[in-house]
Length: 161
Image (cartoon, rainbow, N blue to C red; front, side, top):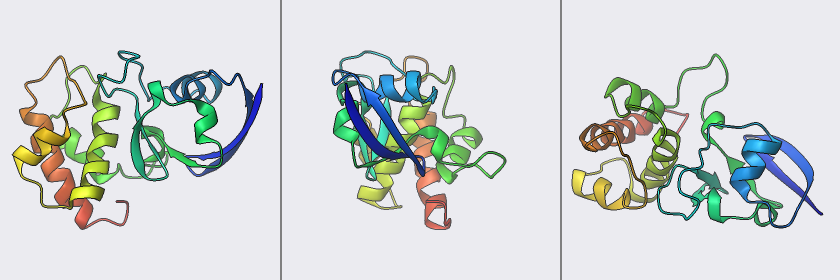
């Protein structure tokens, strides 16, 4: 067993884990943060995207021990209970950027990362290229792209960004 200490959604966490434990398993099974989904287990679909030290990572191919000493943010950490949604979450709701919802947490976490890297004025081509590692089997992506574009603009006006 390996002892790890990290910050998850602003809360300090210490645990003993098998060194082979994936970050997605640790988040879902140990911490019961089930918003991060397991889709493909091969880093292809993006359903498991979380932020580690502010950068998007696929938690299905990241070991929990690799997060030791780092800060992890999951979809649950974007808006506190009872607080307004993060601007990107609100944009996905408002612009119908989801259907079944399975890919949505990873899409939103990726979208926020795109905004942090590329800025608040995103064209459709850039958004589509940046979403290459995130798959949705329900939509035609048009509403996802529209949601990200609107969310990026809203993040510019928000202190939750």
